[in-house]
Amino acid sequence: MTETPGREKPLYEAIIDAQKLAFAPLSFHAALALRDLGILAILADRRQEALTAERIAELAGLPIYGVKVLLESGVVCDLIALEGERFRIRQLGMLVLRDPMTRVNMDFTADVCYRGMARLQETVTTGKPTGLRELGSWNTIYEGLTQLPPKTQQSWLAFDHYYSDPMFPVALPLVFADKPKRLLDVGANTGKFALACLEHDAQVNVTLLDFPGQLELARQDIAAKGHSARAIYHPIDFLDASAEFPPDQDAIWMSQFLDCFGEDEIVSILERARRALAPNGRIYIIETYWDNQEHAAARFVIAMTSLYFACLANGNSKMYRADDMRGCVKRAGLQLERKLERFSNSHTMFVCRPA
Ligand SMILES: C[S@@+](CC[C@H](N)C(=O)[O-])C[C@H]1O[C@@H](n2cnc3c(N)ncnc32)[C@H](O)[C@@H]1O
Image (cartoon, rainbow, N blue to C red):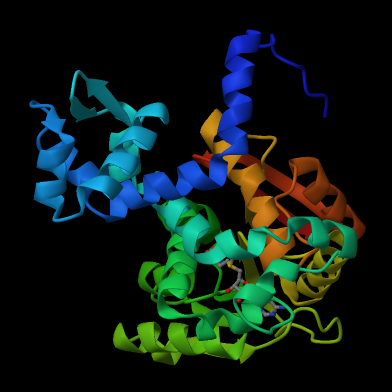
């Protein structure tokens, strides 16, 4: 892939961008405080009338000094406009307050990544997820997912689900066009896709593969919806290359899963998936490739997510380019039967069969 450099910005704009980077952790916390202390909501609710700092402090029930500090940082960060002595919310402030993607990303950054990310340089030099120490003493974040503090776990799950859930209804007809009777959900997490499959097709049996804690959450949700009879829970550590998958699967589903592993691990997982296929079975790999995005915001979010994988998740995984995954597919003895590029906003589906 060749990146064509765009025209350079004027120097004065680049100087401001450089200062935004220099102060990024501070402006991040200012935006978070403006959001979570209710100041942005106060401004949004009274968008027609600009408010003085004193009035905002009064409405928020906060000391005037801190409110002024936040408001003024919000002004230079373009969240808030200053009109004479009064403040009014701007478009960026509205996005921080109301845009679901921005909220999910800010919560994930604040609750999961923020403290650990200060160890990024150590991660790069050692290849270890050194930031994970801030959350717990596991080798990977996945081992500890169900033991994270509630707010951290909630922000992790919200981030995961935000980028998966809307894709499931688009993917279901594609996967079920082949009428699979046995489907394996590899890295099933809390069972959202497995549950969607069980509700979509009354004939399908689904086996869920993940760590035991995640499977227990899935088991509860699937039982609550009355589908326990067609669900099998198979605890596994995918890093154990000798852990084969349950065989004779018509469809093997891997959604936003392979990005949790390094390339050699991906090849090992795909080889085991290949061996678990029934004669006409297919493997469905769904990923968001950072080099294959329509919108600059999606490309930015996906590329930044690699820093989380490095520093907090496991130290050797990342968001891949489509060609990286194509290479792993080939190494695992599979052929790419179909490639559905951005079949659902940011997601690309590889449909694979044994070569
Ligand atoms: C990013 S989530 C993807 C969840 C879901 N497939 C989706 O589309 O949202 C990755 C899942 O893989 C599981 N996982 C990662 N590494 C694992 C390992 N070594 N053994 C077992 N499960 C693992 C995690 O527990 C998590 O549930």
